Length: 146
Image 1: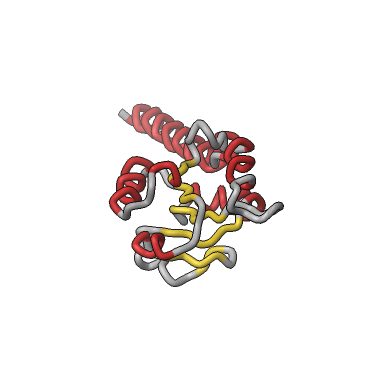
Image 2: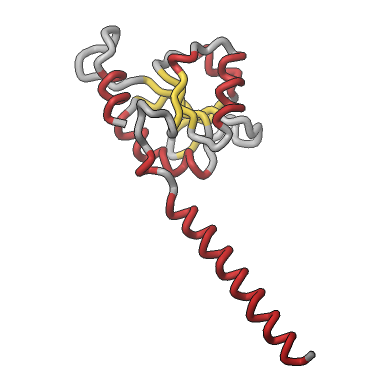
């Protein structure tokens, strides 16, 4: 993460001390987890999302737009914050957004892995363990009656 922040924030066209202008693509679980970090280190222009019901609303004060609106914005990078990395990257390329301006949370130049929503993953795993444990318990209870 430090590498891309340094590169983006020292871009020659940017005024001294300015932050990279970023469009975050994805307002789902990963996007909501990354939003506080992105708001601190970037000038967050907008959040793009493919869910039409989100377009026109705001997430923590940041406007949510459709992907088709991205080319009309002034930005340095589009940061993909979704598990649909390949699909969204292809969609952005079809919108004529240059590949070098597309980054994602899994990009080797960004290093955000420590900000991945591990808490959500742990919750899902714990829920799965609870369900499996419940099924095993229920199976043993049923076997007592057989």
